[in-house]
Figure 1 (cartoon, rainbow, N blue to C red):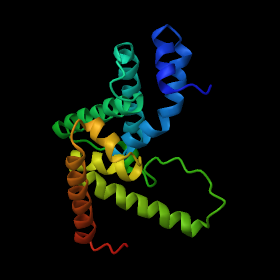
Figure 2 (cartoon, helix red, strand yellow):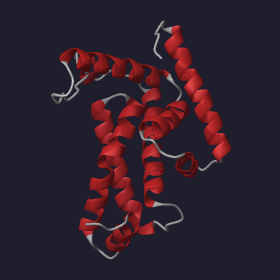
Figure 3 (cartoon, helix red, strand yellow):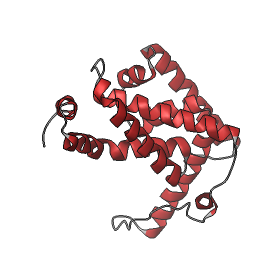
Length: 190
């Protein structure tokens, strides 16, 4: 199917459930990655991504197209993640997954890199995720959207419902906060 998101939304509104399945297929990895980078937990990320798609499904008939579908969907997923962080602040717990040595990570063999390179890369990712988890939800969200999801400033402004200047200043402060966390822990990365 080479239909646009908007065409798929129109088909869904007319009762075509396969159109929604195609939208999920297009965005499931991006929404899961957003949720993972926001929570730092694979299981929670899967649950939050699923919750985001449930909310999208329930609200899709009301989607007016004032913004692009992807922007609208990211806004919903971001709100789901923020809601979860608020809940977690109220009750702090540790999952069994987090206590495991690999964090429950599904490891796919990478034949293009050596085992040492893979180990260094995994270690770096874990440390960066640790520092991301220590940031405020707003800083974490904007860093994930820009640096990991590679959304444009315009898309982020639309998702967060703020000006581009606000996006740029929040992003600058978030980058500074992350840099300070890295420096404070004696990490020397370029």
